[in-house]
Length: 355
Image 1 (cartoon, rainbow, N blue to C red):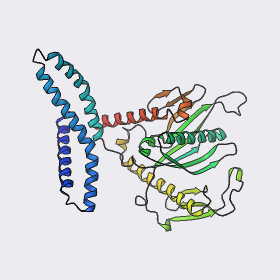
Image 2: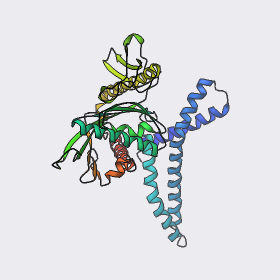
Image 3: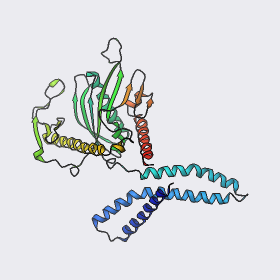
Image 4: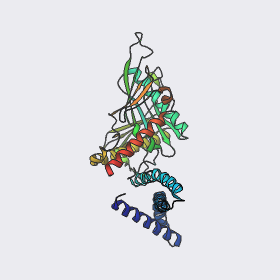
């Protein structure tokens, strides 16, 4: 490793020791204790990796000395070969641990899926995508709460939203934002011709009230009677809520709950996430150079993936990955293969940019 990086590792190890001693002294007040405890817990896995790397290097040096002894040479060379393979892995782990973290990775997420070009077929595909993420969430043990669904008459979704909560939700789903394209023969197509249609996915980090403050004067709140597919009434009270954020023009409608208060709370949750995402996008634009080193910008107009049903394949265009297991992807089972590959590509790109 470069001398500058080794110096940085020394600083982290020293800081970790200082924090350990300060916490052990037991003289810190509540706020200081919480702040330093958080820093200590974040540094601990990094320092564990540094110490593992340095132990391996020390073992390599000891094995090299033993190799001069004819009786120990064979054993020492075997140990050195093991360490030659191990040390680069440990160095990579340390470098990855030092990469800047997305402060939103540990957040829960708001998922929004909207039908794009392709009429009813696009709406049917949007519904399938929404259910794919629902199954994936179940497989990972996440909580998937449907916030709103706008259905078409034959089972498609014009748009649908859900709140997903659990461990590493946003970290794993953030690269799903963008245009998802489907190629297949619609059931209504008599000639057997393949159609192409699309749906848009947005994954937003869930924001708390402390992250985004919304003034009452900036909101217009309209209440109305909820309706189902085709316009039929599903509610006899004015429980549906439409929030309009006047400064940005953002509009959120919630009508799934029978309670006006619950619909308003859900609408505020979605609005807060959208406003927070606008702030994230503005920061990303200001760091355009960094953004070029990432796998995807999260731009909702970016075509990221194609699902070709006749050929049974799913292709992620950002990393040129194709899986011939479309059924397992749509069931959520194989979605992790795509997500892991994208995360690995993102890590590699950021390592190259940091070099």
